[in-house]
Length: 128
Image (cartoon, rainbow, N blue to C red; front, top):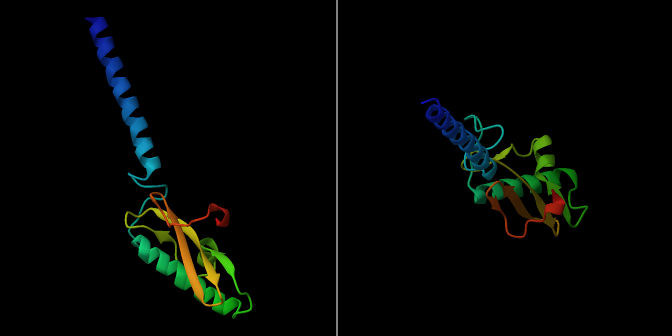
């Protein structure tokens, strides 16, 4: 009987380890969330809304700081957040996103965002 109980306990232990590993894997994929899980005080947005937020925040920052003196530039979302132009970016599932915006011809802003399961077409990691 002892050998049967040991084998059963071993299978239970293996099951628990597999469950733990799969939970960690799902978390890294963004299925279960991300570090700093959504606490209800953050605003959730669709990816299009996030791009609009970054774009408009970058244009306002550019107009306030540079007033058309630079033709083309790239502005990181971390800079916009630290200067109060936008708040932290969270997708519809409450996962944190980052990105940047490119100002072109003194007036056009094109935003690029990166979330755990989404990236804007044309996103270039060298601007992170």
